[in-house]
Length: 372
Image (cartoon, rainbow, N blue to C red):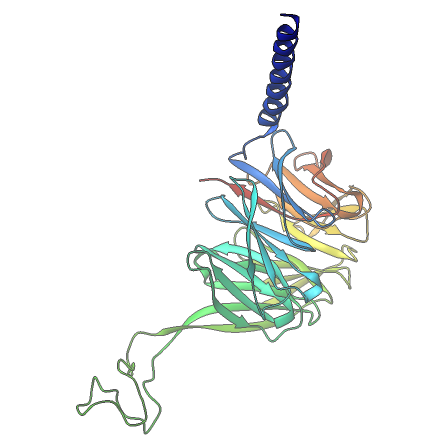
């Protein structure tokens, strides 16, 4: 009886330990919030999913080596991270934000050096710095379905307007900004001497192989893109478009200046000197009143008044900073302090640091995900 009692006691103890251990794991597993802040860690090669209310990391998922930028799908269920490698790599990492796990990578092939990202019209838009191009990946077909060359060196960051009518890029080594505009090109029909297609001519196929359905003059226009290249300061990298869509501001890392482009006029209308050498990112607040500039080479976050075009404040945030992400309601900004291994939280009313997030070593690119 004593032996049976001892075995019974041991079984009860082991069961209790089992339930306690796995129950703790279950309790510790947190679901992805409806709204979440996404933060890439270069050192850890992870994407952190952060609860913006508690500022706690609820999950981490692995990504590729040297992740730089991240974007969330429109439904907030998937994230895509560019695996840059200084222009050498050719991968986009894919993360299931609901399942909190990595999905198979996207191989961009000859489009090496993917960096800047956007998500529009159900597709992932990305720059391919090493290929001097912009491209789109369609998750529905699992294919890259559009490529456009820029002819500029180090096409780096990317902005796609609503309806994909315009695309803006900064081209770091060319010291330019590209404005690409979608336009319709009239159908011109087959080349001279080729004649009409077989649908318009009896007697079978054209001897030189013009296929059925060749568009003739006056047919529906095909879509094309026109590019305008605008010279700005040296080392332009981080940029943003004002919420009203009228201006594009780019921070020029080598000059320490900011170029302001009138988008309708397609020209630089002002150059500011906020002394932001090594500037990395520039972002408007959602109301368009302020502009924040981070610098990898300095510990200050520079804040400008967008209307007066003058400095409002320099906020001490650490030893340097990269990515900037705005909270959509305009209450806070998040700044990735890469050398300090934390994300600084900025109150946009007081313009003070109110907290820090431990999202992994060398944080950089960030995004906001809203699950539909």
